[in-house]
Image (cartoon, rainbow, N blue to C red):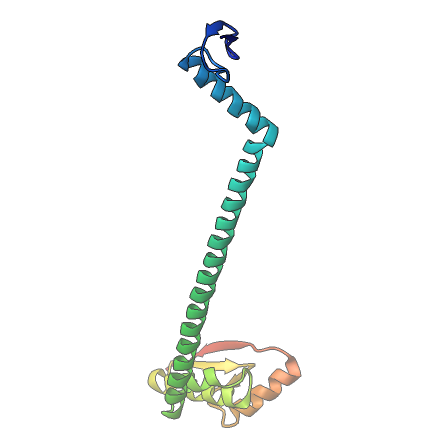
Length: 171
């Protein structure tokens, strides 16, 4: 039986009626061409591209979710350590204030409260007693004044500001 090759269109003789190609080379090309036609007809390459893109997107989402969770845990750990450090500092500050440290008492007191200015007076008085060369004045009120804290709080309410300066004491 004589047939024509579907690739090179040459005539060839065969005993098999369903044979399409004259040689192995043409068979290889024929299979390749048939695959290309199938891919085109079924939109195979586009489907593969979309599947790969979907898989990459899914992997990225998983990685992103894992990264977000990792960062959330890290932030939680940092926040917990920070809260613990603040708590320990507060405890230490309270212990220092109980032992009479005026700067610790100032840090614990509300700003511009009577407690704050009493602690400030104690701190500045101690420095003055050690040095006796400089005297601190707040709103022109000396820290050596017996009612310093009360007068300063009142002057802040009246004037609306705090002005401090140091006066040099000459011997």
